[in-house]
Length: 429
Image (cartoon, rainbow, N blue to C red; front, top):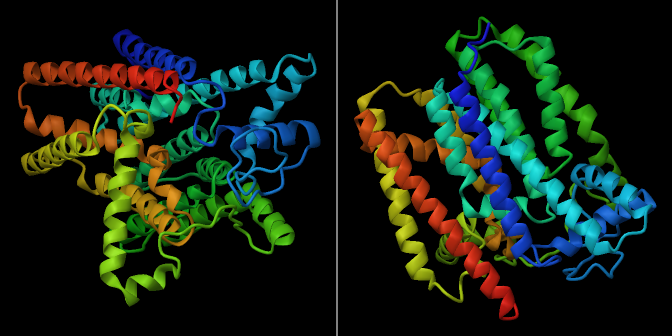
């Protein structure tokens, strides 16, 4: 029987979830309707499913308004849009203005975000086996400005963050316990399939699970290979049943299982350019990585008028470097599950590798899409909590450290919200 959580844990978790919802709602109200990243394109997709029961045609240029019937998000898998199409269709039957429906969809996105933060807590608890550290991780991720901002606009990234993080919980548990029943494997397969059906980025989960399964086998010198292979077959089989039809459809309709809408790569000649001109490739990787790194933490386009890039980027690098040094100190002190941490970091590195290939070979605008890393924001939170723990030894020092983090991140959100309001008040350019 699992140990019941004390009332204090429930109250703290509830406070984190409610706080995140309020913060996301503030971002949603401050950001004008239709001005979230790619928001009209996402809205077109939802409207198309609600009114025509089919995805919209794929637009080959950015769709900046909802007046088009095509969408440059038309290549995306349909789960998020199908979920949102239900309330759209219900509301649309009563004939309210489109802006009213848009506002409701934003609020529903906040609800998805709240569930995501809950599973950030669950993943951190699975890793740390500590309520306090799991709560600290959830609070940290909830206060990343881009997390609450993304939850407050119409965008499928918040749903992939939820499903990806949720699926990582049983993957990590399997990695640690070396046990996965048929029922658990089927549930993990369903979660993986639903995540893939939300965004193809979730194919990363297959790679993470494969590495976890291989590690479980190696620890027992492959004596458990039969059971692991059976579990893997169930996971992958269910995932294919849930999501495979979409890729078959794309192959039939578009001639490829993974179509793209926009094509504006950093490297016009593709990844081969890295071999032909390594210096150019490395320069592109550095600038792209630096850009997406800044956009992971905040929607930087809202603050660039008021904060120079160097004044924002280098202090952020310093804080992250300090966190990594703290992790090294904590690992040196002992008592840290290094193998599980390595698996989580591997998931983050796969996410980075997929983003990098996409930015270099498909669409350079991915350099500005830090929200693509929200599925592994829980890993970032775990690293920061470990880093803080590495620097601070005593219980009192840790409490003070947590308070300082909360104050710092609340202040960061207040600054971003103020920039958000000022940015759009000045015309949003």
